[in-house]
Structures are given as C-alpha cells and as structure tokens.
Amino acid sequence: MPDEEFSDDLLKFYYKKLFPCELFCKWLSYGMNDLARREFSFTLAGDVYLRYQSFETSSEFRKELVKLCPHKIDIGAVYSTAPKKHRAILPSSFKPEWKELVFDIDLTDYDEVRYCCGEQSDNAKSAVCSRCWLLAQSAVLCVDRALREDFGFEHLLWVYSGRRGVHCWVCDPAARKLDTVARTAIVEYLTLVRGGTSRKPVLTAGGLTRYESRGIGAPEPVLHPCVDAACDILLPRFAAYCSTKQGQDLFGVPARLKKLLSYLPEDLEELRSHMAEDWLEHPSNGMEEVSQKRWNTLRTFLKEHKRNNVLKELVLNYTYPRLDANVSTSLNHLLKSPFCIHPKTGYVCVPFDPQQVTSLNPVDVPTLSQLVEQARAGDVESSVADNSSGRHLLSYKRTALKASIDYFEAFIQRLCPADVGTTTMTPGSTVDGSHNMPSVPVF
Image 1 (cartoon, rainbow, N blue to C red):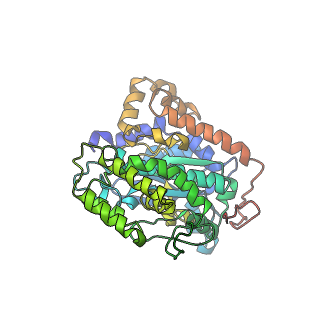
Image 2: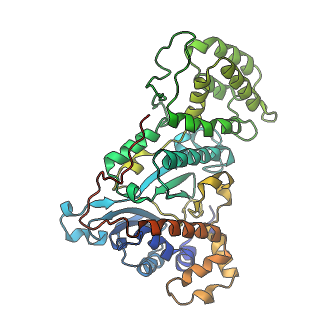
Image 3: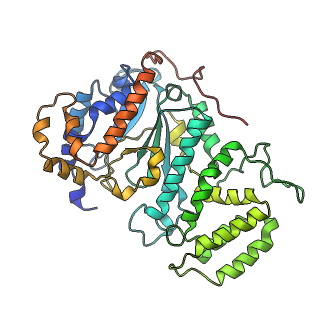
C-alpha cells in the first residue's frame, strides 16, 4: 500500500473530523454510565501496544485519538473499575464484568478451500478478492440467521474487518451478560468446520452421523434443524463458489477435483472413480464454465439416488462458517473497533446491513485517503472548527462514510431505548446465567 494511503497526518485528520466519537461512545454506554469502565487498547506506530485505556467522555476519547493517532483500536470488556486505574487496586478486585458476544470470521481459516488468495496462491495480489469473498458473505448469512432465529438475539452489529473478514457484535442485554460457559456453548452450537483437518460430525436430529452405519436402502437420517437451515442458505450459493469463471474452479483443476470427490463416502466409490476418470481427462481451460456444469451433474445424481445428506455435507465442508472460538468465549479478549482504519489496506472497518451483505464489495469500501480528500474538498473544516459535541459528525456527510454512519446511528437508536430502564449492570453485578440468558437450542 502506498504511503499516501495511510499516514499519521491522515489519521489525525480522520480522528479529529470524521471518526464518530459521540455515536461510538453512546453505543458502548448503552444509556448507562459504564463508559469509564470500558477497556480500550491502542496499537501505535512501531507496534507499540497500549492496553487498559479508558475514558470518561467522548470528548476525552477524541482528544486522545488525535494526540496518539493509534493505527488500531480494540474494544474490551466493562471492568469492575476503570481500566486506567487497574495498577492502583489488587488484581483480584479487577475483573471483567460484561461484554458483547462477538464473532470473528477470517478468510485465512478457509485457506485449504480457497485458491485465489491465501497460502495456496503464489500469485495473489491481495488478501481477499471477489472469488473468495463469497465465503464471507455466506458466513454472515448463516451466523446472522442462527443468532436471530435460534437464540432470539435482535441487536447484531456486523462490521467489515478492513481486510479479509467480518466481525459481529451481539449487543442484546442478555448476550452482554453471558459468562464464559454460555459463550462457549453458543460457539460450539455454531461450529461444524474448524479448518484444516479438524472437523465435527454433521449433527442429525437423532444424533446419528453419516460416519455411523445405516442399513442398505434405509432413509437418510434427518439433519439437525440448524444444519438444514444453513444448507438452505449455502446450497444455492455453492454453484457460484465452485464456478470456473466466478469462483474457485473446484471441478476444473485436477488437484481441487480430487479433493472435492474425496468427500464422497466409501459406498459411492464407483461414482467417485468414474467421475474422476472422466473429468480428470478434460481439465478446465479457465474459459469455459466447466465447474458449474459438473456440479449440476453431481448434484442431480445425488438427489436422484436420495443422497441429499452427502450433497449437503460436501457444501458444508467448503462453505460453512469457520469461527475463531477464542474471540467469542473469553471476556478478556479484545476485538477491533468499528470505524478504525486497517493499517495494511487503508480501508475503514465499516458497519453493514447483513441482509445486504451480497452487495458489499471489500474493494469498494472507503479508504482513509479517499475520506480525507472528500472532506477537504467539501470545505467542511469551517463547520467543525470548534470541538463541541456533535459538530464533528457534520464532516462525514459529504464523504463515502455517510451511509455507514447513518446505518450505525439507526442501529444505536434501535438498541439504546430497549436497554434504558431494563438492564442494570452496576459495578457490583456479576456475569452469570440469569433468566435473561438464552438457552442453547436443543432439538
């Protein structure tokens, strides 16, 4: 990335004029007086890491951003006392009390099944492209559905990570009070594929997996409802992912074809051998749409022979969401803040509507240099000359950041009224299972 795309001078302008500090702090306060007990961490130039930062007000927060120009901002939990005072108290008295339930989806966890970027591509020009971004889109759709429909959560803030992934902040009061055990249970419920060779058998309603024997001619077991719901999302999208022209050309490149066919069970060895022999003799030339045609052939065969579960498991192994469990389960873990700038790309970590994720193109996300140029060209500096609360938000209106901040503001307006008066998390409260905590769905 050219130096003119990311610099301390550009960051200083961004933090002073464009970063939505007031909305940001309103979000993290939830209508309560807990901002001062919220942990932030800053990563400065030269990888200098400052943890246990905390602020009383949004203006104090902005002042420190402008002063230090952090290259990265991370958000942590709300602690029993202000994090900046942690050295003055006993370690046993300084504990995290609550935090949003968060999820981190990074496309590096899919490197074994993506060939355009990542470790399997020697010629990759970027960390992500339109061919593998399909995986992130599918993950958002699956996780968002599960959290809303299976757990009943409503306030989900999805954020582009700025490079090769997405983050989800579940902000419901019940989610924020979950303890480690409950968070782990939710992550396990949502986990089928962990990447590499680590896999969990696909769940069925009766507990049977395809690795257990079933009688010849017996019907396939009914999959667990959460798995079936994911397949309803992923199956229609798999054609694009395996596509020669749009995706990974899974059926056209010999090594990729062999890997894909290896997912077929042993009782389909004859089919696997026949397809491998026929298709390996006619590899893709990259021009003709070979993979989608072969995918349709395989799909038709499996459906006609009532092997829908084989079809579904193949798709799940390639495209089911792969979560970083440690990010979600630990109250001490911090996660990159919305609206910070990714130092390696210059892209802004923008919030987005999960229902519109298929329209989100990571290469079209605003960059730091673009926003600064737009703000300066709009001659808006005079309107934000003083530092009064709210005035800074005027600068973004003539930049490409407007849609993201408008969405963020609408999200907060829906969230905060639901919290005020219904949730009290005082310094003496504990994070434990309560009547507000959702149970892990069991079928």
